[in-house]
Length: 219
Image 1: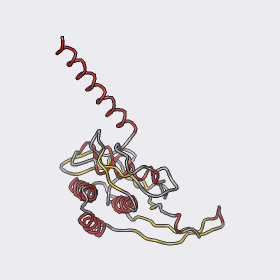
Image 2: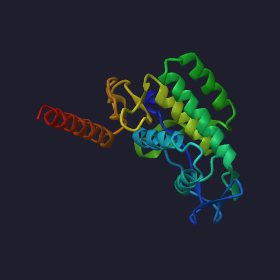
Image 3: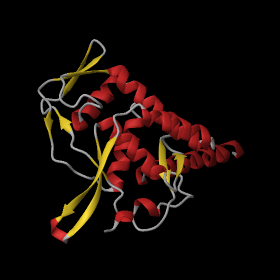
C-alpha cells in the first residue's frame, strides 16, 4: 500500500445539465442535477478550481457560471441554494489564504479549522485497486464545499500563499518534489504565464514611454 502517494480528495459532482440562474437571492437549477462519476482530480486541476472559487467574491454572474461547471456547494440533489451560502464560503476561504499570505499563520489556521468544522466533511476508507492488485486509501468529500476546504488544506501543506504582481490574485507556490504543482519556485511572482507576459509588456511600455518623454524634454 502507498498511503503517502494518495493525496487526492475524491468526489462525485452533481450538476444540472440545463445550467443555473440567479433569482431572488438564490441560485436556481434549470434542470434536476445529475450525479457524475466519482473522480479524484490531479493536483493542478484541483488547485485551479479552488483558486477560481476564492476569486468569485460576491459577483452573482461569476457564481452562476462557476455553478454551471460544478453544481451547488452543499445541496447536491436540490433545486436551489442561497447565494449567501456561496458568499460566506468564498469570504471565509479567502480570509484563510489572505492571513497566511500576510504572515498571520496562526490566524489563518484558526480560520481554516473553523471553516472546515462547518462542513459536512468526508469519509475515509481503503478500496481495492483491481488494475494494480493493490488497495488504495480514499478520502471522499460529502459535498462540494467540503471538497474545496479539503483541497485548500492539501495545498497549504508545505506551500506558501502569494499575490500575483499582475492581477493581484492569490496563488500557491513552493513545496516539495514530484509533481509540477510542487515544483513551483518559492520566488514565483505570477499566478500564470499569461500574467507574467502581461506584466512584462506593461513594464516595457512604461519604460518606452518614459524614454520617449525624456527625449522630447531634451529637444
